[in-house]
Length: 100
Image 1 (cartoon, one colour):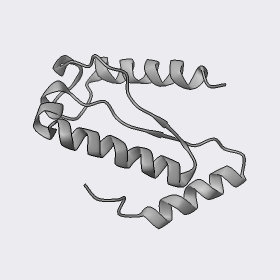
Image 2 (cartoon, one colour):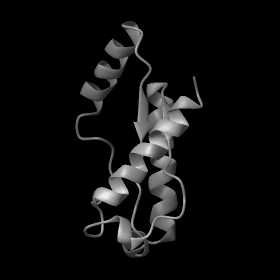
Image 3 (tube, helix red, strand yellow):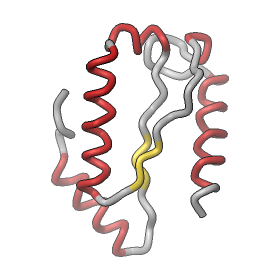
Image 4 (tube, helix red, strand yellow):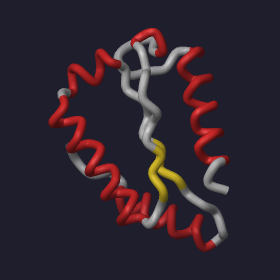
């Protein structure tokens, strides 16, 4: 795992958005069961922890995907198909709406 390649640019962009009154949320994309198995439990925990640290450093919320994704929601190990995209967008809408 490595930090964002453009970490300074990301921090500046977030800071500008906040100054303008925009609430910024970092989204963790869902992972297929196949992709998660390839990643492994230890690396999954490390990735989630590092992503949380990034959100904390930037002072923004982190939206972690809901559980229960299936390989049928993906066209390959990492990319959502139409059904998966629709589910992810509904999930984002519900979860961000609940924060207002």
